[in-house]
Length: 125
Length: 301
Image (tube, rainbow over all chains, first blue to last red; front, side):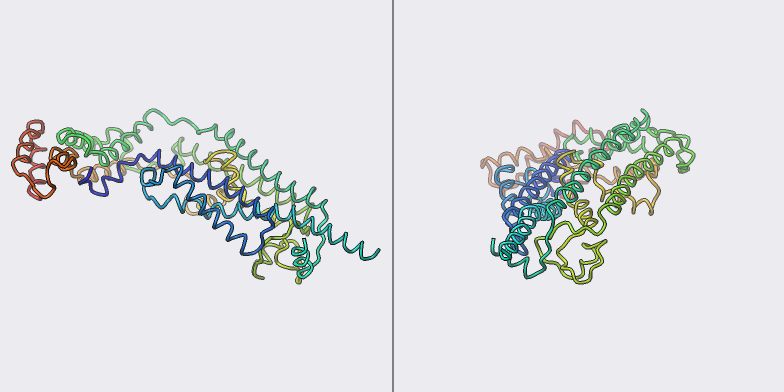
């Protein structure tokens, strides 16, 4: 093993398993982006804080994948160990924005409208 | 409660009726999810799941090619003579066209229009595309007809004015804040954002995603669907690749490496006697061609 050329090392990976691992990561990322998007919406984050929240949760997710799923040794499961940190981060952003908007609109947008109406009516009285 | 109240008041006091949420916002999203699932099922129905089964000879054709690739990649795991026997056999077979589906037609490319399998494939692509486009158009029409000009929701983040035409499609109001989203734009937001939800619901290779067919459609323009590959050319290329492949057995010098690994021998000392001894043993197994090749490699060392 020690005197292997890098090309030979690459051929030691089984492509099917690599694809399966990438699928696993995509699954984790998709569900996490939907969940964190909902969380951001319910928390009522707006503007940059929402995107910072996404970045933080993405890093946290990556760290969890790295530490739990790959036992801090991603090179065993992926050709390129940094895939764990980057795979599917930008794909998840769209879902995050969708759920963030939806939950924010439902929880905060409508609620505010009601309170404004309430305020106006109470002021009239 | 005071903070969002102030932010709404300072931007624009738009009161969204909760009825809009119940009867427009959520229904559009639910309908899009359901249509995505429906489309996936339709594609499975039309395409018959994995599609038409290829013939025995077609499978043999592709597998023969795979065999060459495998030999090139993993050839170092087998012995020298085994490798060379396989190499000569495969490259000869490729050149003769032994594994071709139709050896007679080796020299001219098959016209996809006359080949029934090619025709089948083109029809498949057409059907798939129709299954994509029709629901898309129907939903767009539905939203345009019933909900055009509805303001549905407010984005929680600010955007520049550039996005106004994109987000407020169907609402021609010059002064409205950019963060308000119209019904048609909510549709597009869903189109992008639901992709990973479909991945969760239907698995990785689903057909529910609307954006993927758009990408596929733009590719369609460049080349007609599923141009059948000229396997004879692929075979010739593969045989050339095989002939260029050198062999370097993994177990060469394994005793030394093992001893070095377990610290019985220091890595710097390179014992010539051992390598020669091993050379003699392995040359007993290898055929003439393999031996000459091996010597060539050793000289390079």
